[in-house]
Amino acid sequence: MAIMITDECINCGACEPECPNTAIYEGGAEWTWGGGTALKEVEIDGGEVVPGDAPQTPISDEFYYIVSDKCTECMGFHEEPQCAAVCPVDCCVDDPDYRETEEELLAKKAWLHQEA
Image (cartoon, rainbow, N blue to C red; front, side):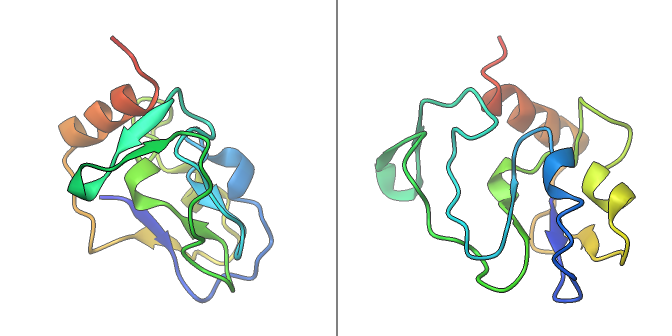
């Protein structure tokens, strides 16, 4: 599964630099597929191809947020999700809407970083 940031977030920003996939963004900030990854373009639902550096709509305007499609729970990088490890208010939690196996998370990591 991916990690999500709850509305208990105090916007301290401790989590953002810890993410190896750059999946965490400040509230209101646009995100990109390519930021922190090797993706040059991504085919999204419906077959549309989006450039990796194309700005995407923020998921939250109020709190830091995690782009679930870029979150690998730090699998392949660390033993545990680093955002949750450094969060002072424990608001980085499992996202029940995004359940993924270890194999799926490792495959996502390989895709994000274009590993052979």
